[in-house]
Image (tube, rainbow, N blue to C red; front, side, top):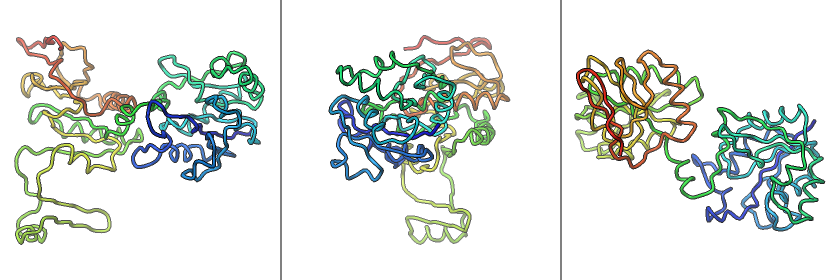
Length: 371
């Protein structure tokens, strides 16, 4: 069986208020990202309302031949020009969709049926993230003639295979509103917090290779509560600053170090870590970022009472809390938890009120009422 692919980009984007295909993530347009993921298929089309109106699209396009009838018309129009036995169908507002997921859907369809659609962990079916055999064309055209434009109604006339996306469910997230887009494009950050000498640096050091093995690029930032000397007195770079330079950069063929003497906010500094999928922050107790707190029996006597934004604990003592608690040596478990939260889009800054804190009473922890 031969496979092509079509990206549905002919919608009106009413809820977003702008063309969703032109939105960017990490500086890359949604459309470009999906084209890159699907470029391995034998043919690739971008479905639009009228290709003459889209000079910004550099890829092969197919105009809607059926008028204003939504995705069902876009799929039918693609079948009219496609020579493939089946088409992978993806809307332009699912920028996290991957080639791996597309291939899994194709494999599911090869087991039989007319169409294979993705199903997320919450049981939601995604008829516009699927693979349709060309035999579906007649059914879709019949629905259009009857002015029944709902894909779910068309699917009732087909033999449907359902692919359980499982841990890849996050890749099927639709970006329909401006708020969802802003959340998607926020830098993912996780603070490792705790009392002084509780083991924050050690935990980050242990987590980096685990997270790297899961495909994430990690940036690490440490906040120093005291002034630190970036350029050792007597070095050339220190002499530059003494002479009045605002910026000093030292580099060789493998690395570089940049020092800028000016005040910066937490947000400013984190913005400098552009190459990281996930930024691990050491400390940042007063920030609005999600936090894993380290609680050690020998350090501090318990959790930090005023700490906000906890999502989990790493502790060698028993805590009375509804949050996950990991043993300090369970690095794989902590890593799996972080990756899961990253993939769900939870590791972003939020406006947090203090809540979910715990207090120590005679060696035990009791959870306070959350606001």
